[in-house]
Amino acid sequence: MSRLRSIPSVESLLQHPDLVRLAERAPRPVIVGAVREALAGVRAALRKGGTAPPVGADELAARARSLAEASLRPSLRPVLNATGIILHTNLGRAPLPEAAVEAVLAVARGYTNLELDLATGSRGSRGAHLEPLLREILGAPAAIAVNNNAAAMLLALNTLAAGREAVVSRGELVEIGGSFRIPEILERAGATLREVGTTNKTHLRDYERAIGPRTGVVLRVHPSNFAIVGFAERVSREDLAALARKKRVPLLEDVGSGALVDLRPYGLPEEPLLREALAEGVPLACASGDKLLGGPQAGILAGTRRLVDACRSNPMARALRLDKLSIAALEATLRLYRDPESLGSAVPTLRMVAEPAASVRARARRVLVALGADRAGRARAEVVPCTAEVGGGAMPLARIPSYAVALTAPRGTIGELARALRMGAEPVLGRIESGRLLLDLRTVDRREVPRLVAALHHALDGERGSG
Ligand SMILES: *Cc1c(COP(=O)(O)O)cnc(C)c1O
Image (cartoon, rainbow, N blue to C red; front, top):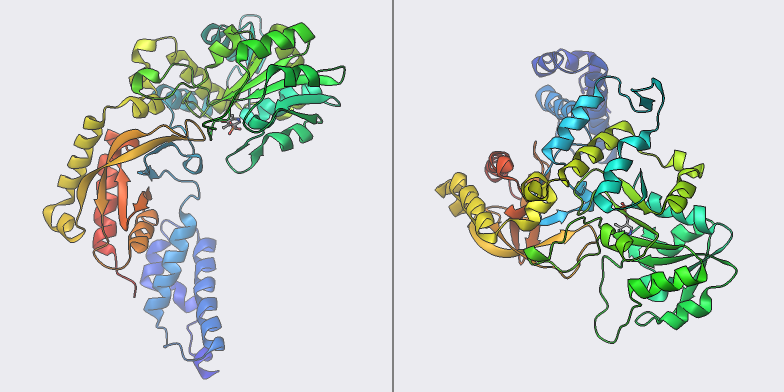
């Protein structure tokens, strides 16, 4: 108990020069909270064993300072993605094009004409900022954008199939990103799942037999994140669209990644395009805004005027609508698609997909040189070929040749080096492969290289081993 009594008081710790200096940039309640937390930690340790070494005021002030500093840092922060996964859902998927960033800044500070028709001065619709562009780019009679693709699916399924059946192939009952499962979305939309075919084969006659008076929608889903190889068969889009037309039931296709341009010229597999789905007779299609489209989180629903209008007037649309910042970002991103020539440089996701491996290698070499011979030697750093991925549940089989800086931990384990890089002022995410940490430069922009190098200096110099 005497040890407990020897612990400094909150008031005396607050006079410590370190904490007095911190008060210039941190609110007092934050510092007081941190001091209390640091003291509570010591008391708890003493009560448990009583064998903990005595803790001095300097040590306590340092602990309080680092607690206060941690609580001052924003929780959502920029990180450097050196994983080589271009659309990393945990890292926020698509980085926005510069034009989209500027558009967000332009509307964020003040008021906007979000729901105002400037020509007449009367009430306008927020959809009006996007629909003309979407129609033009997708060749669709009508289109709306909502919170994300899951929201687009929920809205379309609820509009078309609440209290009715949704006919889906067993090969397309997929789960995407751990929480988006087609059967669950269907259920929440109020529709009953009517499975047809088998996991590997579904024929047109399977759909034909299932469609009846209770059918609300026929659903076709792009199984983005897996591929069935071998003895497999899927009904073609044209055949399914023709059948749905003949039976007079709506067909909804979830094309997934929202690719708007063909990426096969860059060596990637074919990915369904919204425009193509609509051109091939699909009356309603949806996709994500922040995957291969390269924009903000959003879901796009495009198709015939009748079906899109039905979705638009569903009261659920209000709950799933986009805010002005996302509308600004999506509008600016879509505008870039009017100029296919400059797309490859203007949209970061497409730029990362398209960059030649040799140019990624040159960037990796620059990082290695900037590390300095001494540091690079200690970490046995070298530039190695590796494989990047599209990610985001798109093109699971696509392998993109890339280059990484591979490091070993000079002290401690590779897991500790990875943690030190994650916990730095500028968090860096890499991937561990065969006991080395790989920093894939395909997903690190040229302008981010100095920040990556600074973070590496810090982690390699400050790393303290396992003690
Ligand atoms: C990614 C994906 C979704 C989910 O899209 P979100 O925009 O994340 O809601 C739905 N369907 C398919 C086929 C996808 O690939």
